Length: 230
Image 1 (cartoon, rainbow, N blue to C red):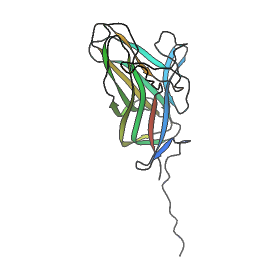
Image 2: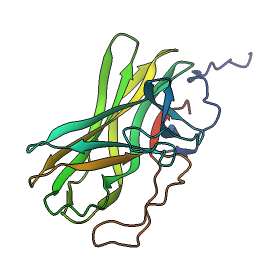
Image 3: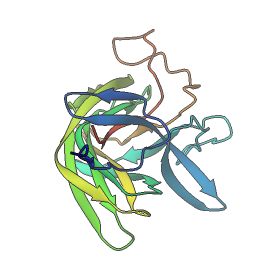
Image 4: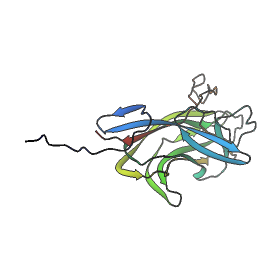
């Protein structure tokens, strides 16, 4: 009697390398760095496993202050003042499921304006873009950050975005991580708010609120769980 041949299911083609694996979820996790790039007057946001330099967006002197996006928050009710799509195109079919993590620093710089006070929060969304349709997969919201007048305040945040069901990506589909910065002023004047996306972690950010002297990372990292065949 011959030996039976067992045909095993072949999983997705492996990504070049995973940063770590989660045996419980049967996932290989890739850590993507978020950054901005600019071609002429066009600014885009992207994800890559490499630690690229990042463009600065909406700031006074981008030659000196690359690595974050800044806007003025000037509404009395919560408003989506930033809506940043960090994209990566997948070059082969993949599936994602499990626990995604978003790690970032955000907040508002120091000011001497006694009438500039506010509060805000971040919503991080995991999405799929096929060139025509954007599909929401899952999202999570950060804590609310309260920023007093005559001060600056930052938070280094780590939020879990649960991906409970399998999402299929075809070759050429885009994995998108969207950052929404919601802000409202709680006094008369507007104030600048910032989201950091510096893969080089080269910015010096060592102040904020009563935590003066603390240092904060200035990277934005998205941990994405890809299913692997076990």
